[in-house]
Length: 488
Image (cartoon, rainbow, N blue to C red; front, top):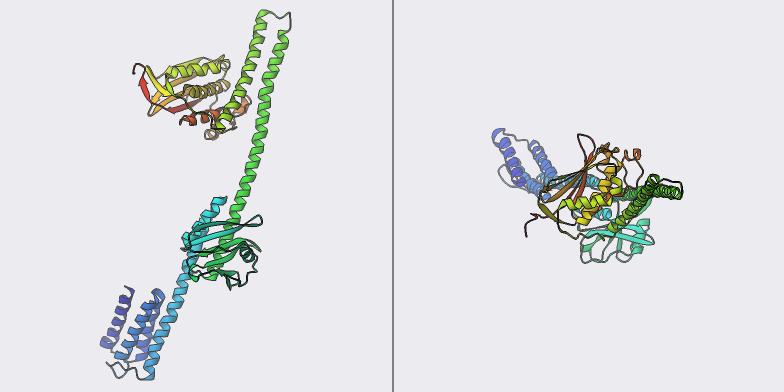
């Protein structure tokens, strides 16, 4: 297409000057032809420019150099004109090709600089290598990064057959002391080729960030200019250092959060254990008083039982969390009515529900669901205990069940202060305690995390939301087949 357009342009100029304008000055025509040749050389491939030069030279000779309308290349000026067109086209095409190549490489470097914003970890280095291979159309890319006394290799692509550089070669490349030895050939400062066969050469260049080398880049499959390799290596070195800094920061953050969580957990456990132990000790001491009347003795016994129940519940939470972590919670489904699950949950936390009216809204009628009542009742018990803790004394707690698409949902509605908006997305995380919880009592933050784990073991889910009428609603959904209780 470009060749046809160039030939048409030369033909149009020839017709205009020879037939219409009657230009007889060959120099003027030659300059116009040169403009066309330069334009074609700057925008097309070399063979198109050479073809245009040949056509222009022949047209100049045939139409404008005497004797007119003859091809005469015997005179020196004809050969000068002809060779001038050829040289101009070659030089201009070469310069244009280099400029376009540099522009493409700069564009690829810019695009890679965006790709280099990857996360930390070993997977990030392999992803980074794949980005280099994709952007620069390379068959093989590898990063050699220091790992103890040697180097770890993160690679992508295939370049067969190949013998990989040894650790000593990589070490010399990183230090900038590489010399021609064996299969290593130094081509330019900081750029070398490792090859047993030139068809499968690996270009090696150190990854430098400041004065220090952080590794070596190996690229194969397409020859890159040394300047491009150095620029690419600089961008890769920055990306590698960024990934390492991110990893260090993440590790520091994990360590900090781990220390905070352990401190908070120990503090909460100490409080949750000390409080019932103190109550139990005081109650037992009072029970030893011979002058204590029977009503007071019963109250002290209730205090001791409540303390024991709290301790028992705390250790059950710890065991449940350990079981979930170990993957030892497997569902055993059977046909059951949700009312049985609700009653089992109430029995587990009866001590916590004292002083609260529990209202049941049954939306299942005569229908039963095929699910694990033990796991669901345990999860529901945690929600009931949570509702009792954060509801005002005497406030009712509503438990409702309903059939939804694909299973059963249980809701627990309380009359507390609700959940802060910032806490809704984190409330089921392990050891997380919302901003409002400190106003009521201490805790370990295990209860709702256990609820989520129990539901995930049944392929269900737990969720929370605030009610427009006040308070919060916690919901449990478990996928389960439904049938009427009278079906076989």
